[in-house]
Length: 209
Image 1 (cartoon, rainbow, N blue to C red):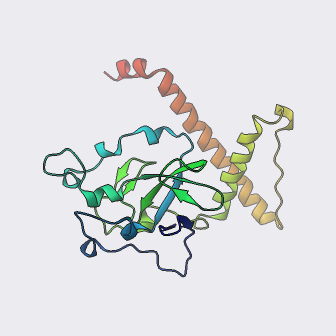
Image 2 (cartoon, rainbow, N blue to C red):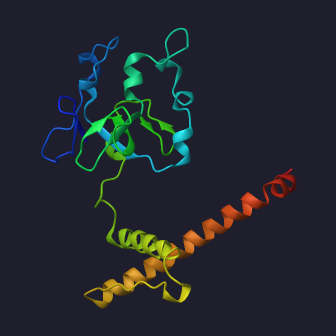
């Protein structure tokens, strides 16, 4: 995503266009300009709990000033910034538009969803993020199918919660059915373990002692 700060517009990233912010040596670290950080990532705020985390608690000491009271201006620019926008791509850092999200400059130094700080600025972006289309076809189909079935729980009766998938050959159908069954079994097992630990944590800790 690119921020057009002159017209307050969000511009989607184009594969053939350079997606690189200025190097640190090219920036006035004491008084950085947002124009130097205009390329980045946009994450929607859909009420997830991780947005309530104080990300300043995650950063290393080197990002703070000598007094330890505030982040250095350069590193402050690398943190998530609240941004509001509409379906036409107009944006503001004030709540003037209906959709709320967070803008994080590239290269990504903080992952709010995983609460991870990438201290090494040379870490490749592809080790932190995954593009649409980089996953396998079977995995993508399983994830989409599971999301559809999950959404049916609030819309349809149990006997009407069905999903029909088509393929053009038996080999793909056999591969996908096996992949989906394995995926579903793994998800159910992990969910069961999570719920068991959540409900019986005290008893488990007592047993471990």
